[in-house]
Length: 114
Length: 136
Image 1 (cartoon, each protein chain N blue to C red):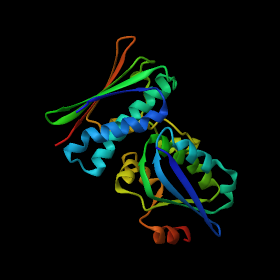
Image 2: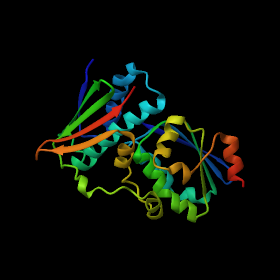
Image 3: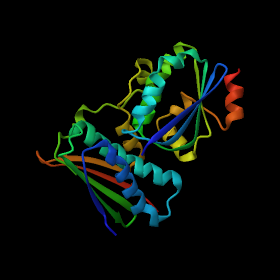
Image 4: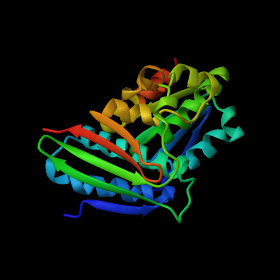
């Protein structure tokens, strides 16, 4: 049930790797990570979802709650490598139209550099 | 096969509930997406009951009973906390949630969109949530 978050920094970009499940219990860790003032120094946050096996409304809610703040600070938040079943949860609420979800890392960096 | 589970009202037990539902449905060869949707809907209801109705009080319990029916699967989730007031429920406006940075309030919307039937009943002390999903 745990969620492990690893950040890799490349210039003005954070590559945030999510490993585990984001439910009402574990999404607190993600919220702390995204609330860290340090993160506002970066222009791009690329979220690697390859090992994100599950997301509930609590996990979605964390992303929803930070989206406007990132947008106001002109920070791009881009998800990539998302499993179909996880992407489906974003789609049920129409969040795939409000957030940037792309296929792989190359696509994510291309969009980030636009 | 065991078709019920009873857990203390702690968020840490949500994983147990998800594993229980996954194990139960394993024999029915559902697609990854459908399996995940059903597990998610049950998880959302249980999270609400644990957090909102029972305030994460580990001396309280929720019980989940699952039944395979002719053309679907039925979940019955019971607790003794504060009853869900469906009349007070409003569908979330996601754009508004984003604008104000709101964290919660989208769980029941997921459940309503995934499940074919969602019912809440209360007799004053015991609350029951019934979920039904058609599966081939």
